[in-house]
Length: 350
Image 1 (cartoon, rainbow, N blue to C red):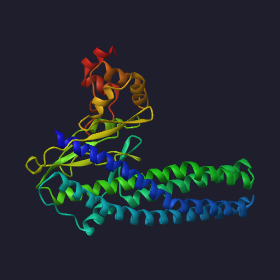
Image 2: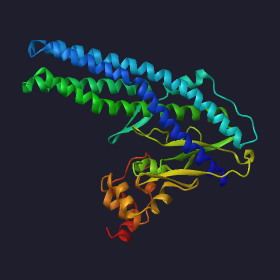
Image 3: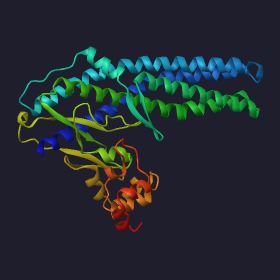
Image 4: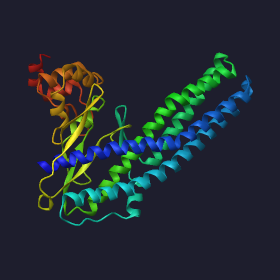
């Protein structure tokens, strides 16, 4: 349907803007991490090599990291709530461009309650965890406090100088901590976008028939998001991005048939070998992946457990990404796949 092509086009382009907003938010919060690193380095330097002061230093590190987490939490809260209002207004604008009916915006109070109070289900390893935005930041602060203290303790035990211990801490903060901060911000912003869309959809449920799941068309997409791509779910039902840290998927509203304006077409972007290209808006991840060269399919499946076997099941066994996940979105094992799809294994020669 042409309207779904158009919605996929607008939704995907909007998702690119959302990622840019997340990058801008991260830059605004960067001074918090810079100040944290400076404070940590100073505290390590004044501790010297005295093991007697190590316990005091550990307490100071905990306090500094938790304080930084509090600053990030407050800054992120302000930014995601501001963004949720913008996203809700964008949804209304898009909706009224493709329909001939009036829509209703959710209130600021409804948006805040949804964005800050509604937990998002995030897969961490093999476990799905329900976390609010504040809990995501708290987990970030807690894990980094522990890792930084472990780095300092390891340096003391190894007999490192204060300069060497400072370098340990600097490498940790500039590397893993910054990467985790990016994941936290990206996840929180995507959660705010989803909740803003959900609130708009609920306020206009009489003229919206569902929401279409859209994953990013590139090799970094997870099997879960690839499997859901193109599926239409009822309002406030089914998988809600972000499904994992750094999730880039989105859901776009699909109006009821009788309210649509005719003549709208659309495309969605895809990335192959680092090159952006445009494909039809109704192209699903599974259909797009089948058109890619075997080297690209190797790259996509290679990041998953039993990736070679899954690529063969996709290429020769006739399975699609949605066949590799269970109803909860978790990847199925080869044994589970064989039990469910024995003919696919025969066709793939496995």
